[in-house]
Image (cartoon, rainbow, N blue to C red; front, top):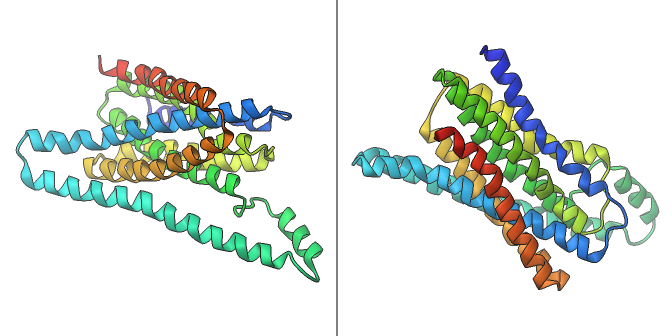
Length: 280
C-alpha cells in the first residue's frame, strides 16, 4: 500500500469523529436526555483516560523490565512532565477564560450594553460560555490523544506492517466515532444547539491530529514522543472528566447518570477491542 493510501486512510480514521457530533443539534431534549448524553460523554472520556495512560506506561514498563535504567528514568520524567502540562495547562486556561467571562459580564451593564451584546453574539465561538468552553477543552484533549493514535498508524506503516496499519485505521475509526459524543456532551447537557460551524471547528480540533500523527509516524518513530503526547492527553482528559462529573451531579439523576456512565465506558472498550485484535 502506498504512502498516499495510508495517509488517506489515516484521514478517514480521524474524520469519523464527525459522526457523533450532530447529536448536539437535536432540539427539544428532555432533562433526562441531556443528563444521559452528558453521562455518556463522561463514560467515554473515563475510558479514554485509561486508554491513553496505559499506552503511555507500556514503553516505560518495558524499559524497566529490560533493566534499561537510563531509558526508564528518561521516559518516566517525560511522562510526568507531559501529564503535568496536560492537566495544569487546562486548569490555568480555564481560569483565564473564567476571568474573561467576568469582564464581559461587566461590559454588558450600562450604556452601550446592547451594542456589546450584539458584538458578542456575532462571534463565531463564545468561549466565555462554560459549556462551549468545556466542549472545546474536551476536543483538545481528544485531539492530543488522536495524535498518539495517528503515530501508531504511521509507525506500523513505516515498518511495512500494512495489515496492522489497516486494522488500526479501522479500529481507531470506530473508536473516534464515539468521541464525537464526548465532545458534544456538555453542549447537549446545557441545552445549547450549536451551529454547524462550531461543530466543524470542534471536529477538526479532535480529528485532524489523527492525520497529522499518521504523517509524522511514517517518517519518524519514537517512544519518547508517544509517551509525551499520551501523557499530555491523559492530563487534559483527567481535567475535563473532573469538570463533567461536577456537571453530572447537578442533574440530580444519579441512577440514570451512573447507568449511562457505565454504557460510555463499555462502549469505549467495545471499540477498542477491534484495535486490540490487530495484535492477535
